[in-house]
Length: 82
Image (cartoon, rainbow, N blue to C red):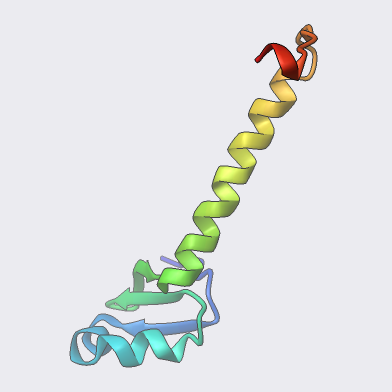
């Protein structure tokens, strides 16, 4: 069975167990596919890459909300009244 690997760097689960920080560093800030018996088990993602990914997901969700509200009727507000 073939599997798509979505990273440029892979490591075995044995390598990860032996030296997790070395495996993370080998990705140079990018995700690493961790293989178990030559099949991808999971992706190891450095904290900064994960935070950036979550920011993109949140931005996409906010964009969808904004798009859904574009056709709503607007209400005039005077800042002095607030």
